[in-house]
Amino acid sequence: MSRIAVVPGSFDPVTLGHIDVIGRAAGLFDEIHVLVVHNPGKSALLPIAQRVSLLEQSIVEANLPSNISVTSWSVGLLVDYCTEVGASVIVKGIRGQVDVAYETPMAIVNRNLAKVETVFLLTSPENAYVSSSLVRQVASLGGDVSPYVPKAVAAFLRKP
Ligand code: PNS
Image (cartoon, rainbow, N blue to C red; front, side):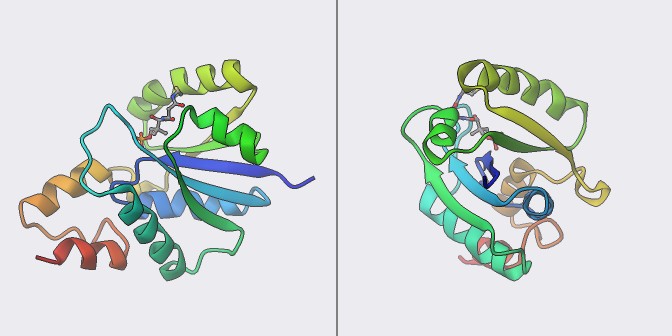
């Protein structure tokens, strides 16, 4: 039976930290579904379709394996998507204790809701300080975000 894992997030925009975690997850599971989910707790920069497109371009750019697909989900719980596609695992990247504190309640709720387990992958040290919110702020003030994001994202954010 093929082991499907979902890597969910806002990806607003995708960073090199996300790409690192997605690529490493692809080596651990048969299929990876990268899922762009609207987070009502955050104010968005990019429309969902644009985030999906930048993820797809970034995955090609990083030469990641072909067992990765990208889609979005806006009609209910994350675990509803997992159940629909037969995914038993959610993968989240962890940069430090703040991420553990943020992710732990969601992991417990998702397991209680649908027996979906969450696997935490520790970020590579060079990405430990990279976040989409930092990228949004630097980009909005005209700074260079190219050290933190795939080339496709840097080019998109540079557009006037
Ligand atoms: O990148 P983010 O914003 O930290 O991702 C958080 C996200 C979107 C994965 C999370 O908010 C989520 O799972 N939302 C879907 C709604 C849901 O299922 N909520 C209950 C799980 S706690």
